[in-house]
Figure 1 (cartoon, rainbow, N blue to C red):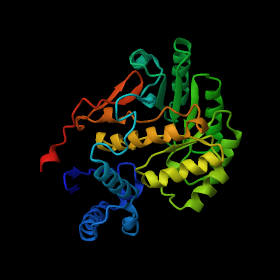
Figure 2 (cartoon, helix red, strand yellow; figure 1 turned 90 degrees about the vertical axis):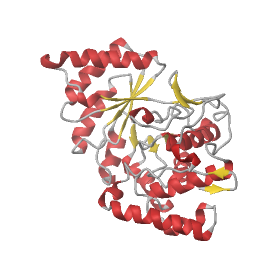
Figure 3 (cartoon, one colour; figure 1 turned 60 degrees about the horizontal axis):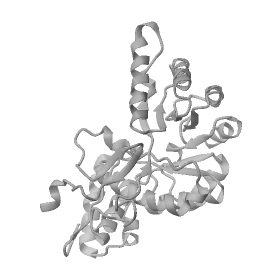
Figure 4 (cartoon, rainbow, N blue to C red; figure 1 turned 180 degrees about the vertical axis):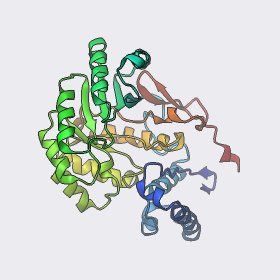
Length: 336
């Protein structure tokens, strides 16, 4: 968006929004129609367009665009973060599920240890590891090796709903509890099974974090009900799939009421989206820090997965994401 001498940019990233994959044409049509609606209404407040939007990622993209238009992209929220004075702690990201401990693949274990060492050298104290159920015992042994060598790090295990039932999930959760380096497990079973997830949260020795479980739940009464029924220790919040900043803040407020801790994560956005999320996350962290102790390590390190990301002032250093105001954005459509 352009208005006077200001530019506003928002990223609609539907990669993790399940409903989009079912009907990509509908998503494209909604984007086109929304663009026309913005031009015709000439309003720059998000509430005017809520009734025309059915996708969370589109709502979030428009929300970003309006905020950055108001404050002049790339700044959405002026803070110590955007001035380069403070960073935000982030977790590193690894795929443990690609490693198995067996005679033929002993090199994989060595490579994994070396990869962890590289992340520790870079300043990461928290690592998020994705696991799979089919090779859990192998992965558990690898975690034991890691604990023996690096007992001070913390690991968030992300199951992505890989356990087929509560019994299997609880067996693995309680086994992981014996490893002091394991902080929590995200989404042990598939979303939508509230009764089973509630049982797991009650019986698991290891804290549970809900992730995919929150997707598609946008009404405040449903958010309250989910938290009351399942009552997890943590929730993982992603503006692209949780209704933008507006919807995500509702989750924060309801979680705080129940003393459920939270952290903010990206949904595989490029630097455009991560820039917006990081600026907002810094504001939320500062506002609610006293209520959210020990959940301050966020998942904003996914930009490294891109091979063609926008060049930006965002930097990952010493286990934190920083905004370097002396660096320039390289966005090709600035001059169009």
